[in-house]
Structures are given as structure tokens and as C-alpha cells.
Length: 270
Length: 244
Image (cartoon, rainbow over all chains, first blue to last red):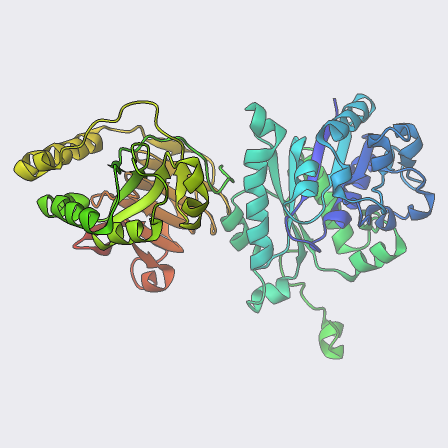
């Protein structure tokens, strides 16, 4: 049985797809057979960020409508073994997703995969609810600012009340907080909420803090999941998050303003 | 959580039925005036269903004047019952609900009785209300955070063993206890219990209300803000005190 992980947030543009790509790749690198599903029908992005947009022939909606088999639609990642992508359709809308159809696809994937990552669209409507409905684990992606935190709180409420686990009265969906675009300098200046503020408001365990980094944008544009950039702080932070997801206890990094070296201070570098 | 903004329910309401036998403006005004004078309290703003089932001369009926006279005597006509077919068109024009003729016999309402022993009746009513209030409703206990957009309602007391997020709403007919931070809205005594109280470990609320009297976060800033506090209603004013 695969573990179904939803990457969700409520608010748009906080880094759900970047996170889905990074966590999916990280789990695959650790030897788990992983598939990442793009639930953002109509606005597909996952294939771009994972650098496989030219290889999309059939998509998630085709499989749901039984116009293609799962094997025809699944794209095998070229860089990472054990990693597959199920892309969204660009030409349909979210009404094309039916609960029965999604369940059938997830059941079939569950037979062969260890992890299924559902990359949720923004919002709290049908598309987002469909992505989280079958989840065992939720990674709530949040930026350290008030509206993003409020939307995450709202999505946590929906996980509590509208997921399959909630409806069946099973043990609740496992909730994790992933704070992205964290900038310790701006936190010190009072322009951003601190990790402690967000933890206090959302009251769920912290999976990781991803520092604001040029590496993320660079990786997205290049179509390479940022976790593969092992030099970058963001890549390392995602790797830590994956290890924590797998049960390891690691200290959180990148929470403090980096100390400038002697030469940086003299030369006035960042 | 309940996302629906309403629920449809069936309910039987006892109501005054004005059974019209024949109609002319002077005699109708006179009789209605008499009836209302006998028990003015009873008729004050009472909803009324006008029944035409026993109307004798049914060629035509001046609905406009009929309703106007009723309203002059502070009655609230809300529906017409058993309108004969040839009057339907003009009945629709007056904007009231049309209900079909009643099969069962309705009981005759004797208004004089209420005039003779008004105190006795009032006492019965008061007793009934008091009895209903004394029934103890079970408390509701919530162990997980109440998140933004969620609403929790308890017919008795409400106990939240976690936080109430901004944008969440907790309501109780009794007291509210929150063992965590209250950032959302808390409304106690929503059915009118002025003795209801709100207790919380950290007062950061958007709104606090007891029995319909409310204060917003702006007016809470210098009253135990972000501290453990309890709120009660005294002379229609909400009092915030530190829990210590």
C-alpha cells in the first residue's frame, strides 16, 4: 500500500509544485518508488518544473476517462530512478476530475508505488479538495506572511472535515508544516513572520524551513527539482525535510541570518 | 463543520386564523376593533392567516381594504387560506402566501378568555419558558484546533482543548472554555443566557459576545489582551477579568 501525500496550501504561489517536485525526487533518491500527480488541471506546471513537458502525451484526465492506460500516461523521470510523473491536462478544467475516477487511479498506483505525491492546485474548491481527499499525510506549504498562514489554517480545517479519513472516522491525516521562502534577515527586520509565530498560529509539527533562494527560481526555469542542487541551501533544506518525513530527527537549519565573512564585510557583499 | 448556510425544517406554529363569513368595510372594521380592544396585547403584531373557506358572498372581495384594516389594528396578515378559484387572480396580486383549504376543523379561539385571566395565562407561558431553560444540555468537547472557516455550536457548554484560529467561530448556548489561544470569535449564551461566561487561556479574540452583547478586538486591547481571561455580562456590559 502506497502512502498518499498531498502538498497543499490554500494560497497560490507559495511553492506547492516546487515542493512536490523536490519531495518526490527526494523520496525516489532514497530508494522509494514514487509518483507525483499534478492535480492542477488546466494550469499544469509540474511537468515544466520537473523538465518533462515535451514528453507529455497522455495525462491524468485521459486516464480517468479511460482514454489511456496508466502506463501510457506515466512519465519516467530521466534523472532519478524510481520517479514517475502523472501530468495534468492543459485543455480540460477541474470538473474533469471525479472522485471515483481519482480513487481508481490512486488504487491502481497504490499497488506498485511506495509514495504518491498529490500536487494540489491553489484554492479550497473542488480541485484542491479532490487532491487532499484521499491523503494519508499532508504537507502544508506556507510562506511566512499573514494571508498565507490564514489560508493554511483554512486548508487544515478542510483536511480535518472533508478528507476520506475524516469522513470514515479513521485516524486523522498526518499534518506537516513546510515553511518556504523564509528570509531570516527580513524576519529580523520585522517584515516577515518568524518560524515561532507560524508554528504558534498553525500548531502543527514543523517538517522543514526552506530559505528564500535564487537557486529555487534557477532550478524551476531549468526544469530540475531544486533538491538535486546539493550546493544550494534550499536544496539541502528540502533534503532535510525528506529525511524528517522518513522519520529521522534533524535540527532545523537556515533559521539565522548567515554571518558575513571578513572579506564580505569589507567588500559589502550580500 | 457545517458549511451550509441554512437548513430547511418543518415546524408547526400556532397562529390566529381570521375566518371570514362575509365582508363589508364598516362591519368588518367595527367587529375587528371590538375584538382587538378586548385584548390589545394579544393582537399586537400577531401574524394572521385569513381564511376564506366559509365566505358566503364570493363574487368579489376587496383584498386591499381587508388587509389595510387588519394592519391598522396591528395584525400581520401573512397568508390567505382556501381562496375560491375565481378570486385567485386578485388574491395573488396582494402578495400574500396562498394556502389550500384546511381539512381539519380548527379550534375556535376565544379571545375573551385571555382578557378575563391575562395573568394566569402569562404565568403559564413564563413557567414554560423557565422549564425549558432548566433542561441541562450536554457539553461539547473539541480536542483539535478549530480552524479558520470552521464553526462549532454547542447546545450546552463548549469546551475547546486547543486553540480557536482567527476566522473561526465558536458558539454555545451555555459557557465557553478554551484551553488555548482564542484568536477567532466566541459567542456564549447565544439563546439569551445572560449568565453565560467565556474563559480562555490567551485572549486574542476578533470578537467576544455574551447573549448578544459583543465587543471587538479593538476594545479588548487594554483588557487582559493575550493573557488568560474570563468574560462575563454585568448590566449589559461585558466585563473582562484576568484569570488568576
